[in-house]
Image (cartoon, rainbow, N blue to C red; front, side, top):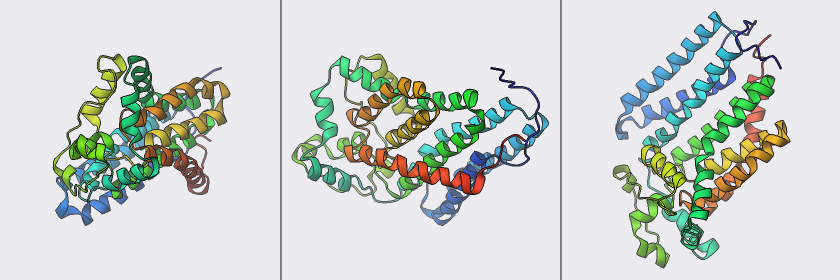
Length: 321
Protein backbone atom coordinates (compact mmCIF):
# COMPACT_ATOMS: atom_id res chain seq x y z
CA UNK A 1 0.00 0.00 0.00
CA UNK A 2 1.50 3.32 -1.08
CA UNK A 3 1.39 5.77 1.80
CA UNK A 4 2.44 8.88 -0.13
CA UNK A 5 3.26 10.61 3.14
CA UNK A 6 5.11 13.52 1.55
CA UNK A 7 3.24 13.83 -1.74
CA UNK A 8 1.86 17.35 -2.11
CA UNK A 9 -1.93 17.42 -2.30
CA UNK A 10 -4.76 19.90 -2.67
CA UNK A 11 -6.12 20.55 0.80
CA UNK A 12 -8.77 22.71 2.36
CA UNK A 13 -7.77 25.95 4.00
CA UNK A 14 -8.34 26.72 7.64
CA UNK A 15 -8.26 24.78 10.86
CA UNK A 16 -8.73 21.06 11.33
CA UNK A 17 -11.60 19.91 13.55
CA UNK A 18 -9.29 18.92 16.41
CA UNK A 19 -7.69 22.38 16.33
CA UNK A 20 -11.09 24.06 16.45
CA UNK A 21 -12.23 22.10 19.49
CA UNK A 22 -8.93 22.82 21.23
CA UNK A 23 -9.36 26.55 20.61
CA UNK A 24 -12.93 26.36 21.95
CA UNK A 25 -11.71 24.66 25.14
CA UNK A 26 -8.89 27.21 25.30
CA UNK A 27 -11.39 30.06 25.10
CA UNK A 28 -13.82 28.58 27.65
CA UNK A 29 -11.10 28.02 30.23
CA UNK A 30 -9.62 31.47 29.54
CA UNK A 31 -12.99 33.03 30.35
CA UNK A 32 -13.13 30.93 33.53
CA UNK A 33 -9.68 32.17 34.53
CA UNK A 34 -10.88 35.77 34.18
CA UNK A 35 -13.87 35.02 36.43
CA UNK A 36 -11.69 33.34 39.05
CA UNK A 37 -8.67 35.59 38.58
CA UNK A 38 -8.36 36.75 42.20
CA UNK A 39 -8.58 33.21 43.59
CA UNK A 40 -6.10 31.47 41.29
CA UNK A 41 -2.41 30.99 42.00
CA UNK A 42 -0.90 32.08 38.67
CA UNK A 43 -3.69 33.21 36.34
CA UNK A 44 -1.49 35.43 34.17
CA UNK A 45 0.85 32.55 33.35
CA UNK A 46 -2.14 30.37 32.48
CA UNK A 47 -3.49 33.04 30.15
CA UNK A 48 -0.07 33.46 28.53
CA UNK A 49 0.15 29.69 28.01
CA UNK A 50 -3.23 29.74 26.30
CA UNK A 51 -2.22 32.62 24.06
CA UNK A 52 0.93 30.72 23.06
CA UNK A 53 -1.06 27.56 22.28
CA UNK A 54 -3.52 29.54 20.15
CA UNK A 55 -0.72 31.34 18.30
CA UNK A 56 1.12 28.06 17.69
CA UNK A 57 -2.08 26.52 16.30
CA UNK A 58 -2.51 29.29 13.73
CA UNK A 59 1.20 29.23 12.88
CA UNK A 60 1.03 25.49 12.17
CA UNK A 61 -2.01 26.09 9.97
CA UNK A 62 -0.02 28.64 7.95
CA UNK A 63 3.09 26.46 7.70
CA UNK A 64 0.97 23.53 6.61
CA UNK A 65 -0.23 25.48 3.57
CA UNK A 66 3.38 25.69 2.39
CA UNK A 67 3.70 21.89 2.21
CA UNK A 68 0.31 20.16 2.52
CA UNK A 69 0.66 16.38 2.72
CA UNK A 70 -0.37 13.49 4.93
CA UNK A 71 2.72 13.80 7.12
CA UNK A 72 2.30 17.53 7.81
CA UNK A 73 -1.40 16.91 8.56
CA UNK A 74 -0.35 14.23 11.04
CA UNK A 75 2.09 16.63 12.71
CA UNK A 76 -0.64 19.26 13.17
CA UNK A 77 -3.02 16.77 14.74
CA UNK A 78 -0.35 15.00 16.81
CA UNK A 79 0.71 18.30 18.37
CA UNK A 80 -2.87 19.02 19.47
CA UNK A 81 -3.17 15.54 20.95
CA UNK A 82 0.16 15.90 22.75
CA UNK A 83 -1.16 19.06 24.41
CA UNK A 84 -3.52 16.87 26.42
CA UNK A 85 -0.55 16.36 28.76
CA UNK A 86 -0.72 20.11 29.45
CA UNK A 87 -4.49 20.36 29.76
CA UNK A 88 -4.74 17.50 32.27
CA UNK A 89 -2.80 18.97 35.24
CA UNK A 90 -4.27 22.34 34.30
CA UNK A 91 -7.64 21.12 35.64
CA UNK A 92 -6.13 21.07 39.13
CA UNK A 93 -5.43 24.80 38.95
CA UNK A 94 -9.19 25.34 38.80
CA UNK A 95 -10.63 22.66 41.07
CA UNK A 96 -8.16 23.30 43.90
CA UNK A 97 -10.21 26.45 44.53
CA UNK A 98 -13.37 24.47 45.29
CA UNK A 99 -14.05 22.29 48.37
CA UNK A 100 -12.83 18.73 47.88
CA UNK A 101 -15.57 16.11 47.39
CA UNK A 102 -13.69 12.88 48.14
CA UNK A 103 -15.60 12.39 51.37
CA UNK A 104 -18.84 12.17 49.36
CA UNK A 105 -17.47 9.57 46.96
CA UNK A 106 -15.68 7.53 49.62
CA UNK A 107 -18.88 7.48 51.69
CA UNK A 108 -20.90 6.39 48.65
CA UNK A 109 -18.37 3.64 48.01
CA UNK A 110 -18.66 2.51 51.64
CA UNK A 111 -22.46 2.46 51.44
CA UNK A 112 -22.58 0.61 48.10
CA UNK A 113 -19.92 -2.01 48.77
CA UNK A 114 -19.65 -2.15 52.55
CA UNK A 115 -16.04 -0.99 52.38
CA UNK A 116 -13.39 0.30 50.03
CA UNK A 117 -12.64 -1.95 47.02
CA UNK A 118 -9.50 0.09 46.33
CA UNK A 119 -8.14 -1.05 49.71
CA UNK A 120 -9.34 -4.65 49.46
CA UNK A 121 -8.01 -5.27 45.97
CA UNK A 122 -4.36 -4.40 46.49
CA UNK A 123 -4.32 -5.82 50.05
CA UNK A 124 -5.65 -9.16 48.81
CA UNK A 125 -3.22 -9.43 45.88
CA UNK A 126 0.10 -7.72 46.64
CA UNK A 127 2.06 -10.40 44.77
CA UNK A 128 4.34 -9.54 41.86
CA UNK A 129 2.34 -11.70 39.42
CA UNK A 130 -0.71 -9.52 40.09
CA UNK A 131 0.92 -6.15 40.64
CA UNK A 132 3.11 -6.15 37.54
CA UNK A 133 0.40 -7.01 34.97
CA UNK A 134 -1.93 -4.36 36.41
CA UNK A 135 0.80 -1.72 36.42
CA UNK A 136 1.71 -2.72 32.87
CA UNK A 137 -1.91 -2.21 31.85
CA UNK A 138 -2.05 1.19 33.54
CA UNK A 139 1.19 2.27 31.88
CA UNK A 140 -0.17 1.21 28.48
CA UNK A 141 -2.79 4.00 28.56
CA UNK A 142 -0.94 6.51 26.38
CA UNK A 143 0.62 3.87 24.09
CA UNK A 144 -2.92 2.60 23.56
CA UNK A 145 -3.99 6.04 22.32
CA UNK A 146 -0.96 6.14 20.04
CA UNK A 147 -1.62 2.66 18.63
CA UNK A 148 -5.23 3.45 17.72
CA UNK A 149 -4.37 6.85 16.24
CA UNK A 150 -1.53 5.43 14.15
CA UNK A 151 -3.68 2.53 12.93
CA UNK A 152 -6.27 4.94 11.59
CA UNK A 153 -3.58 7.19 10.13
CA UNK A 154 -1.95 4.38 8.17
CA UNK A 155 -4.94 2.12 7.47
CA UNK A 156 -8.03 4.36 7.39
CA UNK A 157 -6.67 7.84 6.74
CA UNK A 158 -10.04 9.16 5.59
CA UNK A 159 -11.26 8.68 9.20
CA UNK A 160 -8.13 9.94 10.95
CA UNK A 161 -9.36 13.49 11.50
CA UNK A 162 -12.68 12.25 12.90
CA UNK A 163 -10.97 9.80 15.25
CA UNK A 164 -8.53 12.41 16.55
CA UNK A 165 -11.39 14.89 17.03
CA UNK A 166 -13.50 12.40 18.98
CA UNK A 167 -10.59 11.41 21.25
CA UNK A 168 -9.62 15.00 22.05
CA UNK A 169 -13.22 16.16 22.47
CA UNK A 170 -14.03 13.38 24.92
CA UNK A 171 -10.89 14.26 26.86
CA UNK A 172 -12.10 17.86 27.07
CA UNK A 173 -15.54 16.76 28.28
CA UNK A 174 -13.85 14.85 31.10
CA UNK A 175 -11.58 17.81 31.86
CA UNK A 176 -14.56 20.15 32.18
CA UNK A 177 -16.11 17.72 34.67
CA UNK A 178 -12.86 17.58 36.64
CA UNK A 179 -12.73 21.37 36.89
CA UNK A 180 -16.09 21.53 38.67
CA UNK A 181 -16.09 18.15 40.46
CA UNK A 182 -12.89 18.15 42.56
CA UNK A 183 -12.25 14.52 43.48
CA UNK A 184 -8.63 13.44 44.06
CA UNK A 185 -9.11 9.69 44.48
CA UNK A 186 -8.01 7.23 47.19
CA UNK A 187 -4.28 7.62 46.51
CA UNK A 188 -4.48 11.25 47.66
CA UNK A 189 -7.49 11.28 49.98
CA UNK A 190 -6.77 8.21 52.11
CA UNK A 191 -3.28 9.38 53.17
CA UNK A 192 -4.77 12.80 53.95
CA UNK A 193 -7.35 11.41 56.40
CA UNK A 194 -5.26 8.52 57.75
CA UNK A 195 -5.56 4.74 57.59
CA UNK A 196 -7.50 4.55 60.87
CA UNK A 197 -10.35 6.64 59.49
CA UNK A 198 -10.43 4.58 56.32
CA UNK A 199 -10.55 1.32 58.30
CA UNK A 200 -13.42 2.60 60.43
CA UNK A 201 -15.34 3.95 57.45
CA UNK A 202 -15.03 7.56 58.58
CA UNK A 203 -14.55 10.01 55.73
CA UNK A 204 -14.27 13.63 56.90
CA UNK A 205 -14.49 16.61 54.61
CA UNK A 206 -11.06 18.17 54.14
CA UNK A 207 -12.16 21.39 52.43
CA UNK A 208 -9.33 23.03 50.51
CA UNK A 209 -6.63 20.71 51.85
CA UNK A 210 -5.35 19.92 48.37
CA UNK A 211 -4.96 23.59 47.57
CA UNK A 212 -1.79 23.45 49.65
CA UNK A 213 -0.93 19.72 49.61
CA UNK A 214 -0.11 17.68 46.53
CA UNK A 215 1.92 14.89 48.10
CA UNK A 216 1.40 11.46 46.56
CA UNK A 217 2.53 8.56 48.72
CA UNK A 218 3.95 5.42 47.04
CA UNK A 219 1.25 3.20 45.60
CA UNK A 220 0.44 -0.36 46.64
CA UNK A 221 1.78 -3.45 44.92
CA UNK A 222 5.14 -5.13 44.37
CA UNK A 223 7.57 -2.25 44.95
CA UNK A 224 10.50 -3.82 43.11
CA UNK A 225 8.58 -4.46 39.90
CA UNK A 226 9.65 -2.89 36.61
CA UNK A 227 6.18 -1.63 35.64
CA UNK A 228 5.42 -0.66 39.23
CA UNK A 229 8.35 1.75 39.13
CA UNK A 230 7.40 3.05 35.68
CA UNK A 231 3.92 3.92 36.91
CA UNK A 232 5.21 5.26 40.20
CA UNK A 233 7.76 7.49 38.47
CA UNK A 234 5.25 8.88 35.98
CA UNK A 235 2.71 9.58 38.73
CA UNK A 236 5.21 11.34 40.95
CA UNK A 237 6.10 13.63 38.04
CA UNK A 238 2.75 14.27 36.38
CA UNK A 239 -0.07 13.32 38.77
CA UNK A 240 -2.14 15.88 40.68
CA UNK A 241 -4.99 15.51 43.18
CA UNK A 242 -7.58 15.85 40.44
CA UNK A 243 -9.50 13.93 37.78
CA UNK A 244 -10.77 10.98 39.80
CA UNK A 245 -14.46 11.09 38.84
CA UNK A 246 -15.25 9.70 36.38
CA UNK A 247 -12.14 7.73 35.44
CA UNK A 248 -10.85 9.05 32.12
CA UNK A 249 -8.44 6.10 32.03
CA UNK A 250 -11.42 3.76 31.83
CA UNK A 251 -13.50 6.16 29.74
CA UNK A 252 -10.88 6.93 27.10
CA UNK A 253 -9.64 3.34 26.89
CA UNK A 254 -13.25 2.20 26.41
CA UNK A 255 -13.61 4.81 23.68
CA UNK A 256 -10.46 3.46 22.03
CA UNK A 257 -11.85 -0.05 22.16
CA UNK A 258 -15.02 1.13 20.42
CA UNK A 259 -12.88 2.66 17.69
CA UNK A 260 -10.70 -0.43 17.48
CA UNK A 261 -13.78 -2.67 17.12
CA UNK A 262 -15.19 -0.48 14.36
CA UNK A 263 -11.86 -0.35 12.56
CA UNK A 264 -10.31 -3.80 12.91
CA UNK A 265 -11.23 -6.89 14.89
CA UNK A 266 -7.54 -7.81 15.01
CA UNK A 267 -6.66 -4.45 16.52
CA UNK A 268 -9.44 -4.93 19.07
CA UNK A 269 -8.19 -8.40 19.98
CA UNK A 270 -4.63 -7.12 20.39
CA UNK A 271 -5.69 -4.28 22.69
CA UNK A 272 -8.31 -6.15 24.72
CA UNK A 273 -5.97 -7.77 27.32
CA UNK A 274 -4.28 -4.42 27.97
CA UNK A 275 -7.70 -2.79 28.26
CA UNK A 276 -8.87 -5.25 30.92
CA UNK A 277 -5.66 -4.80 32.91
CA UNK A 278 -5.89 -1.02 32.62
CA UNK A 279 -9.47 -0.94 33.92
CA UNK A 280 -8.57 -3.19 36.85
CA UNK A 281 -5.45 -1.18 37.59
CA UNK A 282 -7.39 2.05 38.17
CA UNK A 283 -8.77 0.55 41.39
CA UNK A 284 -5.80 -1.70 42.19
CA UNK A 285 -3.28 1.17 42.39
CA UNK A 286 -5.89 3.29 44.26
CA UNK A 287 -6.06 5.96 41.58
CA UNK A 288 -9.86 5.67 41.57
CA UNK A 289 -12.84 4.54 43.57
CA UNK A 290 -14.71 1.67 41.96
CA UNK A 291 -17.65 3.96 41.20
CA UNK A 292 -15.26 6.23 39.26
CA UNK A 293 -14.32 3.34 37.00
CA UNK A 294 -17.92 2.17 36.55
CA UNK A 295 -19.08 5.66 35.57
CA UNK A 296 -16.00 6.05 33.37
CA UNK A 297 -17.01 2.93 31.45
CA UNK A 298 -20.65 3.97 31.03
CA UNK A 299 -19.86 7.58 30.16
CA UNK A 300 -17.55 6.51 27.32
CA UNK A 301 -20.50 5.35 25.21
CA UNK A 302 -22.45 8.55 25.82
CA UNK A 303 -19.50 10.83 25.12
CA UNK A 304 -18.59 8.85 22.00
CA UNK A 305 -22.07 9.49 20.61
CA UNK A 306 -21.93 13.17 21.57
CA UNK A 307 -18.47 13.78 20.08
CA UNK A 308 -19.32 11.86 16.89
CA UNK A 309 -22.51 13.89 16.49
CA UNK A 310 -20.55 17.13 17.01
CA UNK A 311 -18.07 16.17 14.31
CA UNK A 312 -20.75 15.22 11.78
CA UNK A 313 -22.93 18.24 12.59
CA UNK A 314 -20.34 21.02 12.78
CA UNK A 315 -16.89 19.93 11.66
CA UNK A 316 -17.11 17.21 9.01
CA UNK A 317 -15.19 18.28 5.92
CA UNK A 318 -12.70 16.28 3.87
CA UNK A 319 -9.10 16.91 4.93
CA UNK A 320 -7.98 16.69 1.32
CA UNK A 321 -9.97 17.56 -1.78
